[in-house]
Image 1 (cartoon, rainbow, N blue to C red):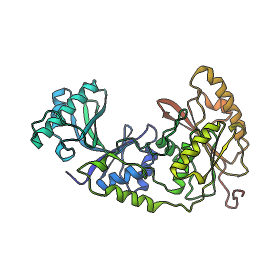
Image 2 (image 1 turned 135 degrees about the vertical axis):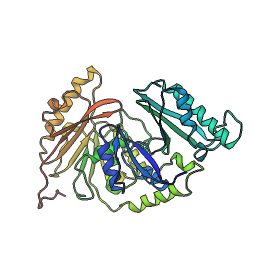
Image 3 (image 1 turned 90 degrees about the vertical axis):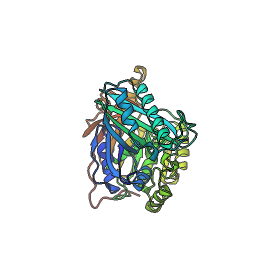
Length: 390
């Protein structure tokens, strides 16, 4: 098995450049993006580091093969030719994942069945067990078979559970943001606590707390994957202690002496209770000021700041009128803070008209399969002699 591997990092549509900047900051300068995936080269150490440190990528996949296939026989042969004995064991718990876009082999469930038979046949032939089925009681291995225009990409998922599962969010609340999306949105703003620790961050529709928690983790340099496990760490082919070393690196980078100013509020007491619980699980509760408050009355004595929020969408027509009225009142409150930057993620049609202000920048993103707009409003840049009030 080669030490240097091709690695794929799936990224939510529209966030490729944000993730590429994160990769660059981690030392990965060559990271071309194509069709929602970023490809780099790396070894086992890189696999461990990326799983622990990457904030907005969705998974870390090893590319095992690429080949052309328009028949199930060609698919079987291409999968069989992969040296699965280097990656899997006799008791590996094999799960199949995949998709087919603009390909002759459009039935992805059938393609997955053929692919798994090829994997089992290869293992049986090479390990010489003469078995046609395995017990599959061992470590989980998720094999991806992705067909795009009849080109097959076969991957092995090193992450297992998606990288958005940091481990701190355990209580349910309405329409939460994925942690990876929240981290990417934060990196899309002017919130940079390393350069300006005094600039506050605020989310007046904080819900279960994902945005302020991710902002605190960024300010403190807390790695998102520090308190969870990954599938690759249970594989027999993985280098020993590689995950332990990556987590040691992550702990060395933490800055617990940082003093970020982070405000999180919501009109729902239940939401604030859940958000506080999640912040405590993430180890950042003492860095966030939580309050039950009406977003339409949001104000601040601090001259400059960054407001980032994911307000209610009003997906049903009966709710849309209420949400429009809410956004109108919220827009009036925000216009009283002309030097603040604001960033709003919403699926509300014609949001700018309801908010009462045309965005300086807007971008199309997706949240939970909903098409959303990400609206950016830029305040005046701070002057050299301007400092936030105490």
